[in-house]
Length: 84
Image 1 (cartoon, one colour):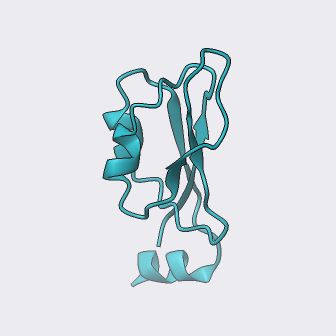
Image 2 (image 1 turned 60 degrees about the horizontal axis):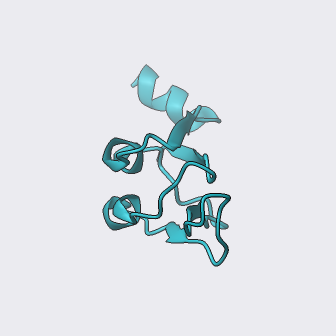
């Protein structure tokens, strides 16, 4: 399965929560602190590495504060699938 991560520009986030509603892994949550603009920003809570880099959160964000990175697949499983 693909792995990814999300980088959040917390100082630009307005806390609309739209990204949290579309995340299929439910790893985006609202922070318990306020940013410089007085909003409660979103934060990534992914200790188990569930993010797949699907980009649904970034597509939904009206302020473009999310950058999604999809990590390269490691190991022989990907190579075996290509060779087959």
